Image (cartoon, rainbow, N blue to C red; front, side, top):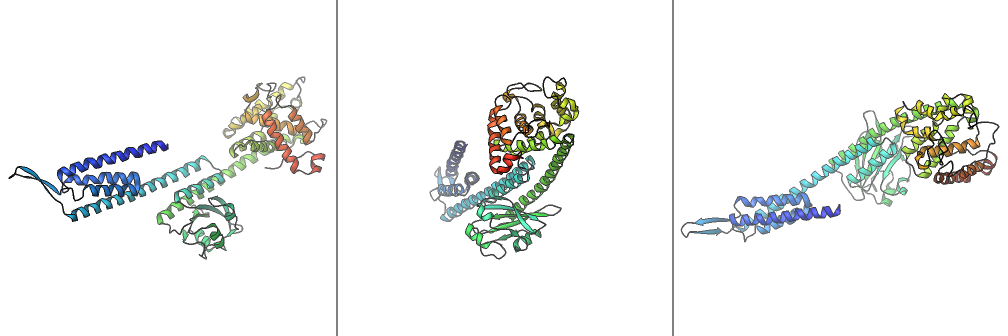
Length: 488
């Protein structure tokens, strides 16, 4: 990319040089009072648009030099002597022409800069909108907006604070730039900040020097961070004002109306995105609560297995974190773990207890994963979790069911759920007559089945999570009762 940019610059520079040479030749033939001299404006404008101020100035000076006193003002034919004669140009003409070239170059450069800036702003706003539509995670949306705002405003830092109606404080929601020491300087209270009170009334305000302006709540912190000017705008939707967005500059700076309007557009996008993200979070919570209620209704038939699916979901989520999965992926895994046994609702109690191949009704137990898929398939948003529901009884060596998949052919979610499901079953067996193992005993048994029933790499990661959990738990809990996975 860098080589391509250099090659492009060289090509444009060569084009400008050729144009200047050609125009100089035409002017020499016609004189500076002819129309050819106006062609010099073209390479000056091209240099301004491509190389900025310096390019425009250098090209304008070069044009002025080429049209200097050595260039004739006009060429005329003297019929008496049958010869062409040149008329010298006045010094004033040379000076005025040079000034014109210089002014055209600066104006073209300024126009180019403004055009580039508008394009950058439009591209940035489009990028923000595109990223917002690609994710509805509140934190990710706000982090993106804060980052974009710093870049497009050419600022040192940005903060987004959300208004908490209960205590009147502006809670820090997202930042970009500066260190944690500044952001943790203390709570920002609406009552203690005249600046924020005015902004929350819908007014965009700027402070030239935050180190001395009484409207800024933490003047000493601004001094330590080396901050100077601050621009603060409300984050508003049609319904209400959600918070404030601030831009911090290290140098004294008076923000233009265009910059204020741009940051206001960012802030309003953040407010709309926040509102949409909150609606999405509420919807996700409702989905999850519905799923939990469904699994509890199934497990309520046997109190020995009550909350089993929730414990498996917590274990699976912890293992997913150990594996470095992102939040969206972990959420789908939790849904799959919560619903991994939903197919049991279509199997009789005799069928569910027929775990051994010797039991005549064992075939019905093996059907529960396929029944689960049939139940969940019509729900479109649950489609990504079906693999975990269907294949969590597959074994690494191919001895599992329903399809006898082996090793990496088994979906990752299913391999994770299989380990967590077995671990919890060993500590909380369905049959009250079965031996209830301690966390360490259950972990040892899972480890012993690595490379036969379970993915050996996942077993190693799972063992790390359990040992870490054991270190955090009390000795009494570890020795006397099953350790419950920590709520995520």
